[in-house]
Image (cartoon, rainbow, N blue to C red; front, side, top):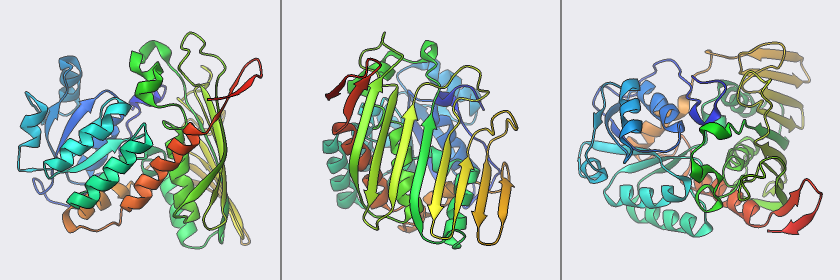
Length: 365
């Protein structure tokens, strides 16, 4: 697991199969983002059998096969889509192309699991909604900053148990290291990556909806800017937004590509959840200057103050739940509407954002 490079951060957990070998066969199509490794790790640990991989870049395929020696390189995307044994396709292609891949996957009768952000336009969201309604198949999204972080999973369990009462506000920070020397060219082009609120902002909005128990929200205000990376004029290295949920809970989040080199991981991601009877702080990837391991959670309520060190103790139940949802036509991992609503709201935040820069000039995008 590469701690300094968020693009290739691929958590590993304990094996917790929910199916027997060969019962749930999967394939990987599109290796443009390193999150494909985290996606496949989670599914394999939950019992999925990885059969195929395809990407136009043979070097990416060769590297993938080193990590997963059991996988077969396909000669084409169609070879995978026409295999009746494949139940689900995982994809991490260029962001703007993820919707088209998903439409093709569902047309062939398979479930789709895509990296975030799943869409770059609101039109794509509607196409996906229509296709899932038409086919009854899953369009799942790897919102990894909640689903693949044990402290974030545990926070959800505490909230469900009533540890902090009703959630009033979620405050999130999602800093990332830009690592420009290792990024592909599409990463800096707005047409392909969609903008910072569309991209890493999607994590923040998804977790707000989940922790607050909301079904919808309104974007009250959002901002984007490029403060440091002026050599990439279409790139945004800062963004923030404020939302109000349909149940009255509020949200503020900030995302950026400004993580300094002195930090021992790619980003000091944190979440604070305020309830009517307590609060939670999650330090997801590091506890700076104290503990290089992540997954620290702090809980304060009417009973006590508590610190939980959760690395290796909670697991990642989402992946097994997703497999069972695909097999049983249930929605225990994440509802389809929640999946799409998080994506829709981040696109609205991106669309309506005010652009600011380091000269403190403000313009509408």
